[in-house]
Length: 387
Image (tube, rainbow, N blue to C red):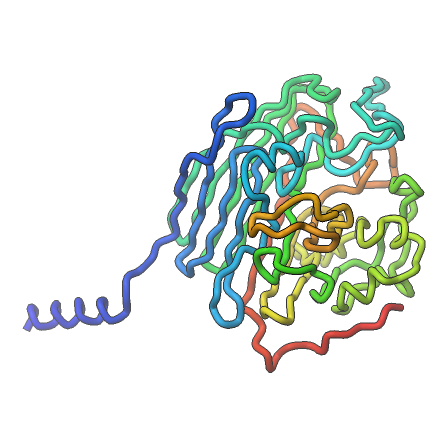
């Protein structure tokens, strides 16, 4: 009897098919022009979703998710090879030591002024030349308990790109069995400094950047945004989204909004605005944005502990760069969600502080989740006139 029961159990397991455990694997990816080896860390969950991360800058090179028919495609707007990533700075990478813009050529902290490498307008961008996106990070993959991930670590030297203090940074990428990719940032310093970390990945839910994202439907859970001057530096004002094309509290087609003649939209030639994430009491990881592609049915939700999310519709893509799928990347072929502190925070005392001191720990988290694709019957009407 016992033998028959054992055989029956084995038969049931065979019919159910093999169980695929979440796993993290590593493989060589290439060698930089300065001779440094780059690895690719591939995370896979038990539902078949995969994420590929490079040790160069923590670049997210691939996120493969299913459409409503179960077909997998890469929803990251990737580049074809290592050479292309090296030539394109912070493309899909970790951004630091300070993401986004700092005006006035630098900042003052505790009475000391720090000059940063800046453009001719005196604006420091995305941490400066050879920022975190161009550095080789040390990788520690892990897996188990329905998760696969990798912790990347880097030590930014005191004075690197003009920033004070040696900064020890780690970013942990974790893929779970619910098709959610979580990024946990942590940093410590030995001197007072400023820190603002994000990831600058471009998404296109159509898959493989086959077309633009203008027919995607976008929702942003924000009642206010931070308007900018002509140099795209925040004025310091917190403006209501009501009555503007930036009112995305209800889903709207991106195309209908970027066509607006609103001065802020014309200035950026599309979305390139920082939204103030609406914080719900008792919610440690508020929903910041939701993106849906009606054609494929794919949905992405972004949750974050960060106070803001900079939404950027790849306005600078001009067709000169090829994507990983082989096609030219044109304006609007991706959208980035830079969860972060507000641009120019060190020079805007009314903004949340980005100062980090010895003994303190910088911690922020962002989750990109991919719920079950939307079925045709559940699709919204693709519309949404602009305010």
